Amino acid sequence: MALLSFKCTDFRCLETAALEFGPEFNLIAGPNASGKTSILEAVAYLGRARSFRGASVRELVRHGCDEFVLFGKAESASRVVALGVRNGPAGLDVHVDGDKQSSAALLAESLPLQVIDPDVHELVAGGPEFRRRYLDWVAFHVEHGYLEHWRRFRRALKQRNAALRSGTDSGSLAGWDEELATLGETVDNVRKRMVEIIRPSLEEYGEMLLGSAVSIRYRQGWPAEMMLVDALQSSVDRDRQHASTQYGPHRGDLVLSYDERQARKLVSRGQQKLLACSLILSASDVAQTVLEKPLTLLLDDPAAELDRDSVSRLMACVENLGCQVIATSLDAEQALFSSPPILFHVEQGRVGKDA
Image 1 (spheres, rainbow, N blue to C red):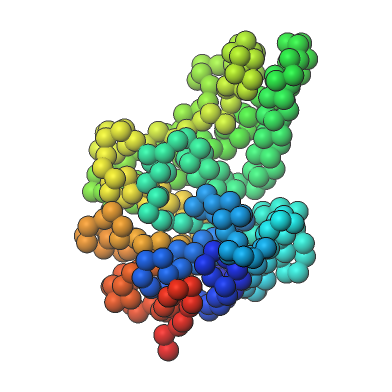
Image 2 (cartoon, rainbow, N blue to C red):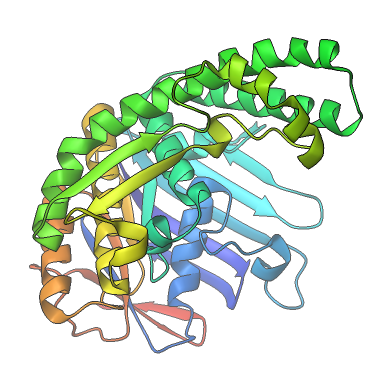
């Protein structure tokens, strides 16, 4: 699976940009603040309907404009799929092959992608929500039906939290506990399976990138010796005090260790980035194996925070993955790839392609 062509209008500093990508290596070069990262962000938005930089819609719309429009063609299962996203004051509008979609799920199915950017270390150093989102991405692409289980759990959680805020009595609250516990156990069990599926690939990439053992385990969001329904009922008073549910998979986390040290506390920023890259590459590897097609990997300034040897090891792993790569760099001459990429130049929001 690869993004064949892409066009964006009024996205950040880009008035209009059109690119024809190759199935393997693509490099977008240009000075700082030229629009390189904005192109990657727009591509990611086409596949996720959200910014990997956490930006609001208002921040993404070019100054003086009302909305942005993204369009792309992706090769999927030996056919070409047309993807379209529009966002602005009227809200998100998603189309796949001309059909309006009620959610972004089909975008993600049609254009599965991962991102490695200068903030990728947050996957290791940041809060648990980063790692839960990572696991859920794997589960969405690997476990059929997971998205629906996850959505139902989120709805039940929202309803229980609303009941807590409204002062619902304990007897009525117990009715929410049964549904939430059943859905929460399902979500949690899938996440645990994903950790086991990821582990062999993560150990391999960790050894290649860090030269030392990497371990991973899932920590569920309630006491291990309890069923979730019992944990929910035991924490009603605390839940009322916080006006939110304190136990469940929404409190789960991944515990990562590098060289027998807890990764969040003891490794440098560069090591955190390499460990995070190991996670991203292992997830991509697993997804590609299950989907039986390559995905798209977006690399924003892969050399940031890394020495030359680390960059070489990272890019060797990326190439071995066999996916479509779209990378950015300050220097068009930087030897990121073993073979010449399709090269684009960006300056002041304008994109040109090498002949």
